Image (cartoon, rainbow, N blue to C red; front, side, top):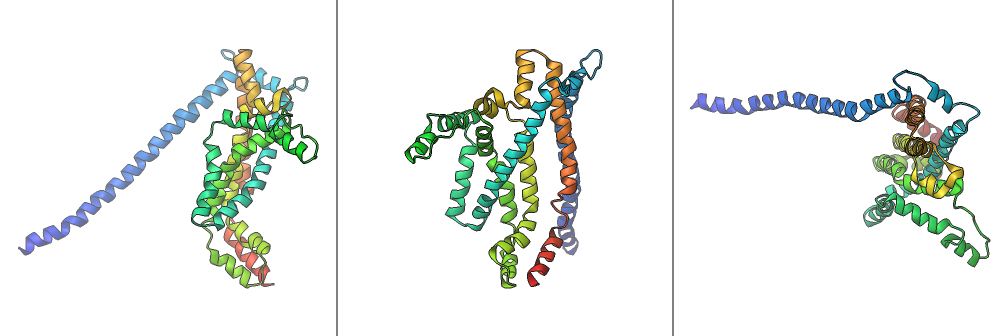
Length: 305
């Protein structure tokens, strides 16, 4: 009986060892699956894109030189695309950071309501949202009706860069708010209370404690917002008109109307190369993880002084 009891007692540890041996294999399988998907969905199309841009069967960089030819408007379009993307990111951050901070400070139904108001428009089709903004921003639209009623004149925003920025920021807001909100809700409120007890005011506590701890979410939201804004197509076409084209609109014209696949691929390749070059720089000079604890400690020292 004692031998049978010892065998039964040893069985569970052996079973745990077998399960522990299976976990690394399952992790390796999941990693290989992820790598295969990345190769299939990103690497293979990327290689095909650059292959097309080199004008096969005789490799040439003529399409790329055509992009940066000073006598053509394409260089200006590339510059305007990055300028509009940076402006849209700045506007989104200016609106999104206070909104995320407000939602993080609330609990219960107030937080749920704030996030619902944020996410419902996000799941609305982009065509529907742009048509709604067209109705609001046009010369005889809702906005100008309100301005005339208040005797404030008129605002001509449709088919302008300002109209494009409004439509883009409306779409991009959840992409910035959610990462920032995720970082803010993880902050221990006792840290802010400790800063206040040391004499810091609300703004000082936010600048010296909350902001450094929320930096990972802010950096992530900024990068995601900027990268997504580079590829906007529908919003510039509907709210900006012909005078506010972005790279995606020129790519569409080159491929769909002019059947110039080489030049369209070159434009897409230029955009991809610049984004890939900017990402390491952003992660190098704006490190989300590095210095967070040190910045909070330094903030605490400044509060004591």
